[in-house]
Image (cartoon, rainbow, N blue to C red; front, side, top):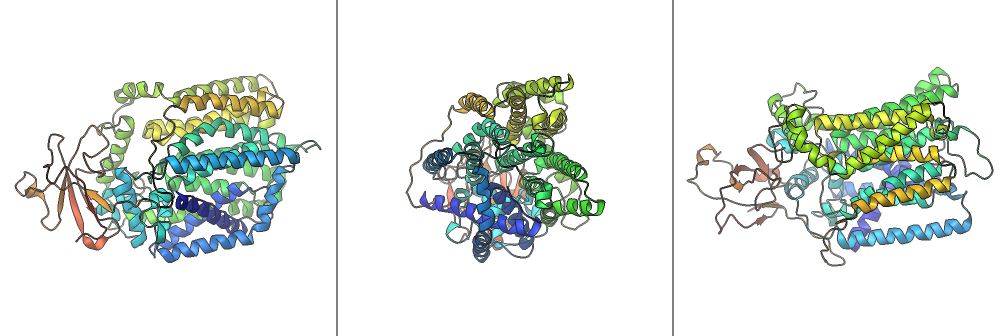
Amino acid sequence: MIRIALYLLLQVAVLLGWGCLVQRLFIRGTSRGMGPFMLVWLGWAGLVALLQILHLLLPIQGWMQALVIMTGLGGLWLGRRELVTTLHLLDAAPQGMRRLAGWSLLAILLALFTGYLVLGPDQRALSYDTELYHLGIVRWNNEYPTVPGVANLHLRLGVNSTFLLYASLWNTGPGEGRTAWIVAGFPAFLLCIHWLAVILLDRSRGWAWRSAYCLLTLPYAIRLLAHTEASLYFDKVALIGALVTGLWLLHLGWLWLGEGQRQPNEREGPSAPTPSDSGTGHLLVPLLSVLVLNFTFKQSLAFHAALAGLLAIGLGILQLRRQRIPMASGVRIVLGWGVLPSLLLAAYLINNAFLSGWLFFPAPVLRLPVQWAVPVADTQDLYLQIKSWARSIGRLDLGEASVGEWIEPWKKGFLRSQEYQLLAAALAALAILIWKGWTGSRFITRTGGVRWVLALGVVSLCNLAAWFFTAPDLRFADGLFWMFFGWMGTFLLAALLEQARTVQTVALGIGLVFFLTVSGNLFPRYSPGQLWSIPHARATATVPYPGPGDALAENRDPHIPTVLVPKDPSSDQVANAPLPSTPYRNDRLRIRTPGNLRDGFYMVEFLPTASKAPQDSGSKLESRESSPQ
């Protein structure tokens, strides 16, 4: 547990240092007001872009980890003055309040950290994806650079997740084989401390609206942290990034459309910076970068990244016009916003092209004319299986089905979910805001006006519509429901309440109500472990099913060892084995010992449910080392 804590703190320090370096490279002028958490996300985007470029030629090995750590710590030293300037966010609060808030934050963080360490990451990774699929990709990244046509060997290896690439950075040296414990809870923990810092410590102008958004979405952050387990499942990481960009978009509207346009009085906190303070708009570079980073984490957020990015760029251009900046200078500024996001996106697309021959694999979009490209039919079939599985867990025949064929069973589950409650509350708030805005009331101009409310509402509804018609699994979009609820709830509170303290108090009450609805089974099962050690993942686990006389023997490749696995088609789990069995599979697929291409491949064939492995060999897991004898 102590080593896990040290790894998490080291990640924060390294990414913060990288954020200071990226800020110096890509953001001209002063960045007064860019807090440490914005720098952490900015550093994460910059580091991932660099890792993708390096991994085109070199595997992720120990020397690279050491270089990244030393560079990050050096960036902390170089950016120490910029970090000190972020303390101006506390200038508006009395000294006694700052001291109390600081100690309260420290106590809450210690409680969260202790609970996370005791209850979460000390457990052994039980997910078959972590054991063979996710961890296999991590080990591949450790041993090999990008290899053309990997997806042709095993379609799931075509997944080009930058989160798994980042995880592979920590899977070297002392962390080898322990990645699922080292990086699993980092994004959720980062989100929790970010939200608590905004709620307790931020007192610059507009703090009430930012605090309200964080309070309304804090239950989701706590639930993510409490449910942390040793896994490399990365869907939630992208949703965490979406929530963070939601906070920045909310602040942009307040800053450039609402009350942020007027001058502060003596009783208010320090003003937040405008584009002229930072030359290129200190918010837009990290905002656009994290939107692209979320897409590289999870391709299903492409629609959200595109809509939110266009909205932010349009708002920035509008602000530049208000400042009467010359056309040539304005074009240079706008292009400057996109340098880092474009670099990150280009590196991702190049890696995807090398892995699968498609720019947006597994989506069947933009196949390249290269020899190793995955066939069109296989890619389309894979995409349809993903859609089928999301529409009805366990079904593989709903990819091209009409809405009427799958909506009824899906609706029964959705109407019982908390996401349905969030959607209903957000839609009610949006309706009230639109009605009050279009009837001539000026009471919501403080947060950007009815047009900004409507713009964010349209973005949210378009995101949810795209999710519904592609892969409507709540695991892929629960964070988007929370973001929609946080936006509309914040606008409604800002419209109805005058006092900032009242806004925060009411938001706290609403957040507590939703927290109570998710508090059931909030914490994972306690699994005691040693104080210092971190469990080590098995290299691979299989259920051998020997039998040269069985019916499938004539279809095997004699040069490839075969592992037969009993499969229950009604579940998302292979019987008695942590082998992959999701819509990403084929009935016959080739797997390798993770991290070791030279040892060849095994052929996996999925048997009917009725088939059972012999008790002497097939019912027990056999752990293999990374280099089987």
